[in-house]
Amino acid sequence: MRDLLVYVADGNMAEAVGGLLDRDQAHLVIGCAPFTFDSRTDIKVAKGQNDPGVYTRADALMQPYAEEYARAVVIMDEEWEGSPGAAAIVERLREHLTAAGWPPERALALVVSPEADVWLWSDSPHTATALGWSSWDALRPALEQAGLLEPDRRKPSRPKEAAEWALGRGPKRIPRSSKLYRQVSGKVSVNRCEDDALAVFVRQLRRWFPQEGA
Image (cartoon, rainbow, N blue to C red; front, top):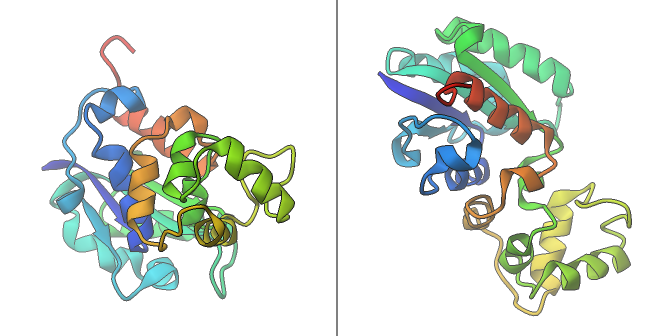
């Protein structure tokens, strides 16, 4: 039985998780013991379903993998047409996980607010270069001038719109693709991302795979 299944709503989140967990010595970056994980097989994407489909059918979609994986994480966005909000989504996903074969101690439901694009953003140079800018010092004032980043914040409140603006207005015009998410998450320190869902994910991995003596 493999250690961890990550079930996501779309390819962007798949690349973001893959970038983090496929790093060399990823367990050291996370601060946990080693565990088996290969994004090519252990990340499943709800193709054709997206967020609404995962919200309504995650139990049926994930159940085929229950005998294959010891632990499961399901991740989706909060913002989509008809969304009932983060708290209601988490509650429903927990019900789905239990019904699919993973009891609470072996399952985690994560909702990214407002959407996966928030994982692109930190004040790291890796974010800036992935979006086509020379540095965060160059990108930040441009975002502030465009009204996309408040002076006292480290990430935009509308991350998707800010990413699209940065990609289209930067010194290098870079097409938006899922590879951007892997490029950033594969390099940025987990301690520099302020996203609550990512922090919960990292803490859960540390609990599931504790370091010796922890």
